[in-house]
Image (cartoon, rainbow, N blue to C red; front, side):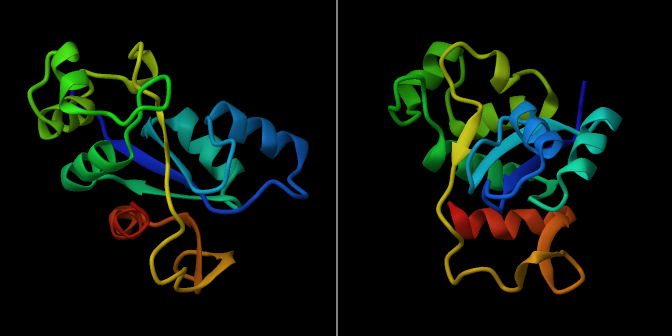
Length: 157
């Protein structure tokens, strides 16, 4: 049961956001700027991402980046950092093993009782390369960026 996971990062804030876009961001659990969530690559999710493309960027996350995200930005309910003792409660021995299970579709962070499905990030080191008001590939940062999302995530972790 292998499924492609997309990392979705909210880049722009909440001022002046249309009501329907704000509702879609809420459904994606992207309440604040520089939050990231992992979603499955399905037609319904793609439709939601198309709706909010002027506020987020997304792409396919790889194993190494997901491992770093879990290790450094993962949190449990209560705000404590995700640690190896929490992984052992879930039956995993390392962050790499948990990352593999997430990417293979065996673990869904939304359904885990004590791991938060939203990761809070820092602004990217060195700042954004281009405008946050234009789309990726057109001298901007928004929209679909494919595997380049991993480079941005590493700069934000």
